[in-house]
Picture 1: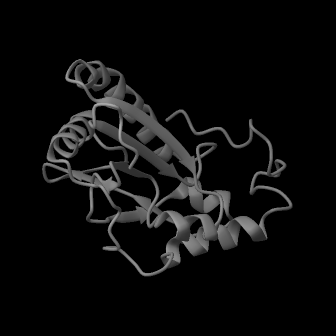
Picture 2 (picture 1 turned 60 degrees about the vertical axis):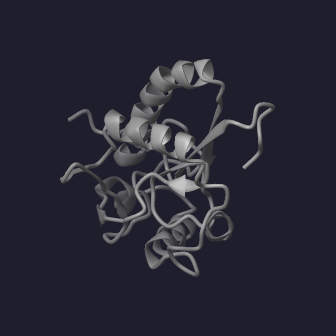
Picture 3 (picture 1 turned 180 degrees about the vertical axis):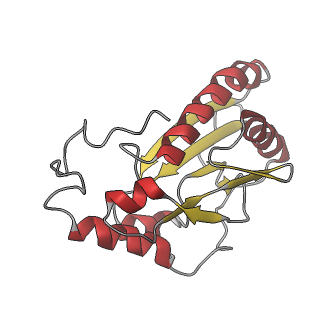
Length: 181
């Protein structure tokens, strides 16, 4: 974590596998943006410097380096806002890599499960971690290596590199729009 001039810094990292089709990643990004836009002025008023880094994890090597274990992930000052990991099958990501076994993170807040974290969960986490001073270093509390689910995603992506499941080129920015349901 980089210190600000006054020593009070909130660094928010949003790590994800896919924003082109993955509805949980897209929804999480949207809620995070809303939460940050509301909480950032308040934190800045109290002397915090706030930054947001959006990180598209694009390889198993990058996932290993970042200690990325589930998608999507939100970290505040290096700490995952939900250390317990719960995943469920993600139709979007499974179709993206021509697999039936890709899971995405499910967020748990106040005993309920969500595909995108509620804004209150993100705001609570940002405030708690900003004021606790915790998170100077990302701890090795999850896995010693990249989890099988992430490996499966990249293996499937590599295997389908000649085109996506819908036939679009892998570099297409308009490929496979999310369903509007």
